[in-house]
Amino acid sequence: MDLLTLAGLLLGFGALIGGNLLEGGTFQSLINGPAALIVFGGTFGAAMLQTPGKTLSRAFKMIVWVLLPPKYVFKTGVNSIVRWANAARKEGLLGLEAIAETEKDMFARKGLQMLVDGSEPDAIRHVLEADLYVSEQRDHDAIKFFESMGGYSPTIGIIGAVIGLIHVMRNLADPAELGPGIAVAFVATIYGVAFANLLLIPIANKLKMCLHDQLQFKELLIEGIISIADGENPRAIQVKLNGYLAQ
Image (cartoon, rainbow, N blue to C red; front, side):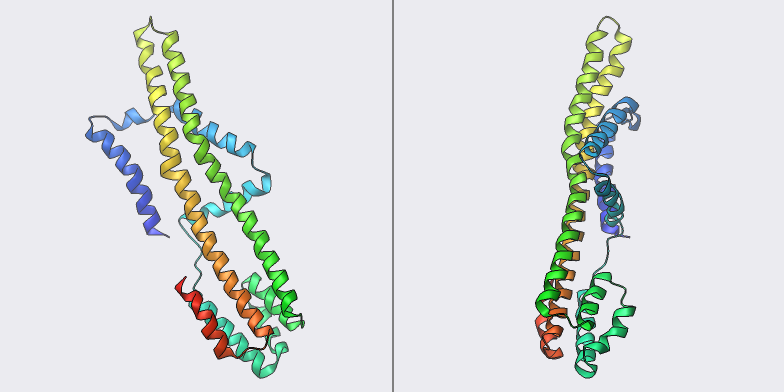
């Protein structure tokens, strides 16, 4: 689990609640069911309306990355490619067949299988880069779901505030009804802005960082596999790929 992300989440909402308490407010003053329904339900509904089913499903799967981001150890990737290069140098490209069958990374397995099949380097690069582009576009579309929610949330909060004020205006003659209406107005605004800036936008940015690491690792694999296909020396391949370690 990414403890830094969890700490940031707790710090953000803790600062909001703590500041309210220091100002003399209560925790209960931030709890309002109608405001929550308007903001959370309206925000999710608006974002869902514009999102295809497959993209929405992918977004829900990627949300796990916020606390459990995928780990890409570039040093291990370089070492694996050098090991593949040594095997190809000693046994020929057919010597990679057993390695391809046991490789867990499906992207790397595809590249290794194309090496075993004797595909030309340009063909291998074309196929792997096409695969990379498709997966990148799919994940970017999924991330846009959270970005769009972050954009809609403050606006929905304003709508909630207007609804609360309408309720206040309709009950000016009844002081007992003024409190709940004003509460919905102000709490809905807080929900909308906080939901966007403390949760949704940070989630989108965190997922972008995870996706960036994934793309960099796949680019490392592409360069390594193409280098093997070109028959480069394993030592030269390692020196070339060490540039990715700074990532």
